[in-house]
Every structure is written in C-alpha cells, then in structure tokens.
Amino acid sequence: MQKKLDQLKGEFLEKLNLTKTERDLEKIYMDYFGRKGKLTEVFKDVKNVAVEEKPIIGKIINDIKIEAEKVYSEMKETLTNNKQQTINNKQLFDPTVPGTLREVGSLHPTTIIKNELNDAFRQMGFEIYDPAEEITSEGYAFDSMNFPPDHPARESMDTFWIKQQTTNNKQQTTNGFERLCLRPHLTGASVRFMQTHQPPFRFVYPGRVFRSEATDAGHEATFYQYEALIVDDKISFSAGKILVKAILERVFGKEIKIRMRAGFFPFVEPGFEIDMECQVCGGKGCSVCKHKGWVEIMPGGAPHPNVLKAGGLDPKKWQGFYINVGLDRLAMMKFGIDDIRLMHSGDLRFLKQF
Image 1: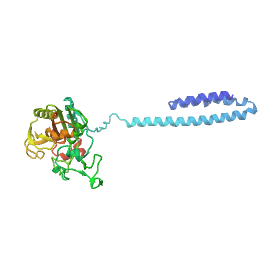
Image 2: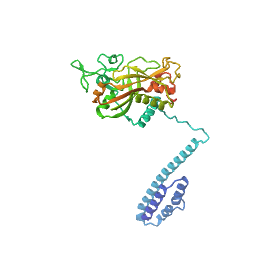
Image 3: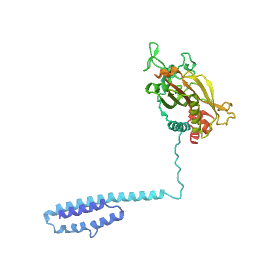
Image 4: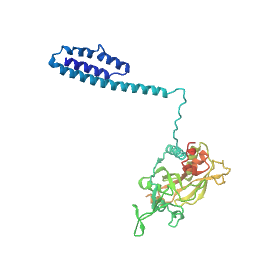
C-alpha cells in the first residue's frame, strides 16, 4: 500500500507542476482528492491494513495530504496572479489611444559638417587623422610652427596656459622644460603626423581648440577646426584653391564664391586669408560677417620650410599646402545660425532643430 501511495503522490505532483490554468488545476485536484479520487480510494483501504501497520500508513497519508495542499495552494496563487496580470495588461493596452512619440537624438550641426567633410576628403584619397591631445606643449603649438619667441599669440591674452609644478624656476613636462597649454590651433598636430609618417601623404584632422578671447556672435573661446595638409614633391597653389572650392561645394550643395587674400601666418609661406560669401545674409551684411558680406573661414598656404624641418622633412624636396577650416562657422553658414555662442550653449531648443 505504501508503494501505491508514493506512486499516486508522484503522479499528482507532476501533473500539478505542468498545469497552465486554474481550471485544469481544480480538475487534477478532484481527480486525486475528490470524493472518488484516486488517493481518496486508497485512503479508504486503510481499514484493511494490519493493525501494527496502521500508524505507519496513517502518517504517510497525513504527510501526503499536507504536501499536496501546500503545492496546490502555491500553484493556485501563481496562476491567479498570472491571470490578473494578463487582465491588467489587456486593460492597459488600448489600440484606439494615440501612441507616445519617442524622442530620438540628433547630431550636433558641427558634427554634421565634420562628417560631410570626412566623406568628401575620403573620396579624394585623404587619410582621417585624430589628434586626440587637447593639451599640447609650447613646442608643438608655437616653436614647431615657426612662431617667434615674442609673438603675441604666446601671451595669456590669446592662449590658455596651464600652471605646472616648477623645478629650478622652470616648468617641467614630459617633453622637456617647456610650458603646456590648451591647444590654440590644430596645426601643431601636423608636425606630429609628419614625424611619424613618410611622404607623400594627404590627411585631414578635425578637433576642438581653445582661445582666450572675448565672445560675440562670430567668436567663441572654444570652437572646432578642420585642417587638411597635402605634402608631395610638387604642389600648385591653383590645386589648393580648387580643393577649397570643392569642399565648400560639397558642404553647401552649390558653388560658393570665395576670395583668397594675401595674409601672414608664421607657419605658411606664402600665406592666404580665404573668405567665403556670407550664407546667412547672402553677402548683404549681417552681425555674423560684421556687415561686410564676407566671412573668413580658413587660412591657407604652403608650409613654411621650418615647419617641414620640424616634421623631419627636407623642404628642398617636399612641398605642401595647408588649409584650416572653422567648422562652427561653416555650420553657421549652412544652417543660417546667426550666433556662434548657440553652438556650445547646450540649449535643447536650439539642438532639436537638427
């Protein structure tokens, strides 16, 4: 009899664990513990058991009932909760109610322009170089770029210098005894590239730069530049002008009027100021172009021989052409933004437009 009780108990528990609905649960329970259930019928046969075995069988029956009631109650509670959750879910979903619009982030306008320029330069065979160091040395920022020792750009009114611990009244860095600063321009990164690559090469390098200057609608203390450098044994200036026009046409989707004026920059010889017609006012004059109709977007020119030497190249053998684009100003021209300070304001009302 004990063997039969254990067998029926195992069947009952197995079927309970496989039950998916309350209705099936009740049916299984009645099949085994109902008036004519399988276990109930076996319980009735206790009277036919020998007297000395009745206490043992009685305890087994009692244990079976306790365990069965416990498992049954737990299963019933679980199924009831699942049923209620399903009902709640159905009540929460109403197909007639309009859906909730999920807000999706977008790219910053400067990032949009940078990506477009990267695509354009890749198609022209340029390498994309990442000058990650936003803290640079005076050597790379000025000395290697042919800035004279007394150049005003080295002063604190133009450059953010970093205070350092001093040794013997000199400021020590990992590159020697020289000052560190937030990079005021990207051009110094070209020397790093030249020192680790063999010409001929053509590459671009976008990044953030810092200037200690007052801000207005057309100037910011922190902004983005995008530089390109070609180095080969023969480079013509007309090729540089064509390069500038091709870039602007790619960004704006149309031909853009430009002008190249003679300009002096320590790192190029000869040097040019490259202007484009203001796209905010169409050349009529506004606060962005200071009512001149033209916006200076980049300096350009041939790398100075001293810059090539700093990069480990022979200026008698190699020639080159620099351009340095102000990404923020290009974005302002393309999207009709009349104040550069909006670009770094973090104002979501502004950013959501792109």
